[in-house]
Image (cartoon, rainbow, N blue to C red; front, side, top):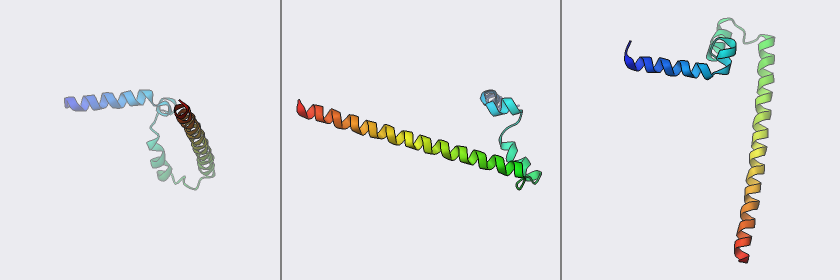
Length: 90
């Protein structure tokens, strides 16, 4: 085996060691899609329910983060305006 390949394998194993899904399940998340196709599970009710649930959770999380970012940006605008007003008064 070439030395540069050994480094790649070490890096891959390091990533796997930090990959919670891999540690808990014993396989990569990339294997899911392949096996869903292979086993014709795209129309399986349980898979569809999982997909719908996680799609909603993802959308909710994204909305919460968007709202959080907007609130933070507004606070920063208020802070900047206050600083500029304070500077103008001096």
